[in-house]
Image (cartoon, rainbow, N blue to C red):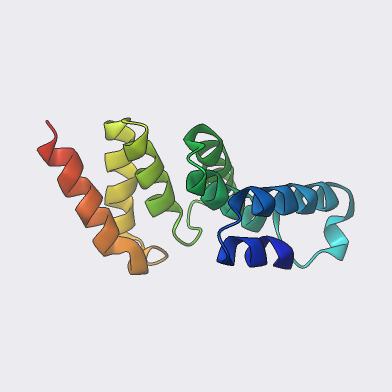
Length: 123
């Protein structure tokens, strides 16, 4: 997964996706040998898919994380932002509101407020 982070840091998001998909395959067969979790891989895949504007794929990965751990760090923000981009405003509002009260999303609460304001003024 370190190669994926290296690619992410230099903006090679498609290469990062390829590395994360490789990591996912390793996890499927050798999870006990890995120091990463499926949630880590899925969250980072969601981030990379967002970076290349493949929001449906990003949403799928973020939802996998949420189903495995609804208290995962920054998951409410990530889902809320993705739903907002996809113009699914009611779902966006739900996750963005959850972000505002989530300790795990604390560092993203100002972003959640900004997105909520945009959603609320677009009606």
